[in-house]
Amino acid sequence: MAATTLDAPTQGSRVHQDTPKHDWGSPTIYFIALLLVATMLAPVVYIILGGFRTNSQITNSPAGLPAPWVFGNYLNVLKGGVFWQEVLNSTITAVATTIGVVVLGLMASYVLARYRFRGRGAMYTLFAAGLMFPMTVAITPLYLMIKSLGLINTLPGLILPQIAFALPVTIIILVPFLRAIPDEIEEAASIDGCSRLGFFFRMVVPLSVPGVVTVGILAFIGSWNSYLLPLFVLNNEATYTLPLGVQAFASQYSVDTAKVLAFTSLSMIPALVFFSLFERRIVGGLTGAVKG
Amino acid sequence: MNLLADGGSAAAVLPPSGAGRRRRGIGWAARLEIAALSGPAIIIFLTFVIFPVAMAAYYGFFSWKGYGRPTDFIGLRNYVVIFQDGLFIDALKHNAVIVVLSLVMQGPVAIGLALLLNKKMRGKSVIRVLIFVPYVISEVIVGTSWSLMLQTSGAVNDLLKSIGLGGFAHDWLSDPKIAIWSLMVIISWKYIGFAVLLFLAGLQGIPVELHEAASIDGASYWQIQRRITLPLLGPTVRIWAFLSIIGSLQLFDLVYIIWGQYIASTAGTSTMATYMVGNGRNSGNYGYGNAVAVVLFVISLVIALVYQRFVLRRDTEGALTEGKK
Image 1 (tube, chains in turn yellow, cyan):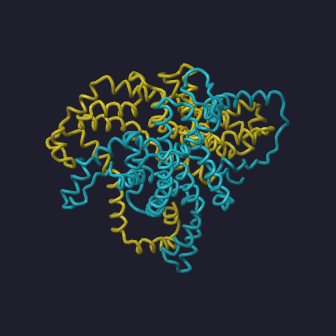
Image 2: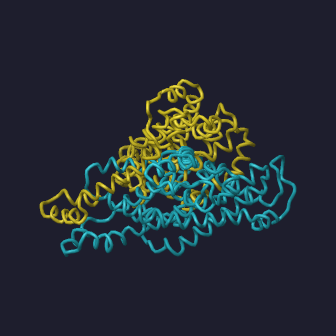
Image 3: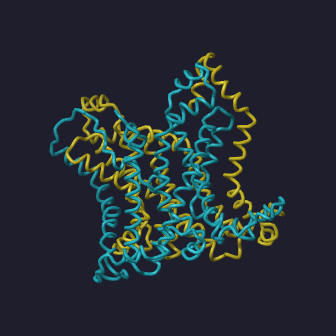
């Protein structure tokens, strides 16, 4: 945010800040920005508006606007049980994954950041190496593993692997956060009779909230959107999460485009809401991760 | 950082910079705490990440349909078949094209956008949220909606006709000459928000004083960006490129959703991962699928190591490393 900070302090620096403005010319910036936003949003708007049209409207003029507006598609989806079942499955999976990642990740990061012991470097390397194993590579044996544990068609069959695969990133983000807590605080706490575990719960957990929020959001969105793992693990429609549901719905009603569009746009609302609420936190947390 | 989960990270190879702290000696209590706090994470990580990956290497030597224990040991024959299969070679080529085009198409645009969004302007925060929208919605939604729009009778062709460019209407998805470009447009649209987000984070780390000093010395806006901002953004760009390369090599969801396993190879968009799923699990050849997974992993690993050795090494104070205390 160079520009913002630059702008603030004194009259003197304001002058310099103004120079780039003249170079660009305000209208150009806004035009580019507008173009950008339009490009990013057009497909999304297409889905949402398409849900308000009828199939014949879509066939006659694929890129047109709703005329008249039809609400039946959305109401049909909302009234059906399938959509809500899938929302529930996705929510359970994402929430459980998020909690698991945060709790396990925070505990392990605390050990890595604030204990000195032999094998600490090895432990860190082990988790960091996990970044080299994306789920795509492991999916086939992972599927066999989940099958042998009897977790096929169950939500824990998604949750446990998702926690495991999100741990490396979580630990890499959280360790610097926890390491940055000044030793003096720990010493002060220890003088006041606080054990190290007590210090963990009373000081570390509250102080690491910004980092935790970042990893939590990333884990939640990752889980909410995940496709490959559910594709392998779930083959019973009752356990489908939203991404599989959207795909199943799209092939089941392939002739009913309007309904597919309505279903699709409803299914993206939760992730969008979640993201726009926490956007600042994500950027902030990433900044921490990127700059160490 | 879902993005990171898809790829690797510089930190994978860089050891943690040990904070040289004074510590009490480890007593049994501390050992117990260490075990209790890190045990659950280690167990779940070994069970669901390390163990399956190791098993892939083992299963890859067998002809195995996934029932019972693998007994039909065939040595390296799976690997020989993989590299003799024209479909796999095609997929490999597509991956290479996707890697290069992702870097070329997204990089410059994302840097430009990050510079733009780093300027002072009204509505900046709204724009920042909006350009991440594609990144946040799931691959399935992106795939479903783009394939509807790109159908021959879809919205894109309709739009082209209505503005008098009907001659440009194409069969965007199944024409092998065009399909890969359609895929690249979709990929760029979906993932550019992430690149911008990383670059914005990187820009925030550049000291304002440098810009001030340069502009006092009479440097223009563009000179400042070229001589100061871009070089200082280097480490972030190199990290992004790394993540992008790994992500492109592992690409699966979008291709599988839009083209499916069969059309992808005729349309020229198949990737190693779609080949793996199609010829492994979907056809019941688990031994073969695991061998493909190993090939995919080794290729990614080699590229990652080479990249880290020759590119990321330059960044002594690299981005995703733990930073210096």
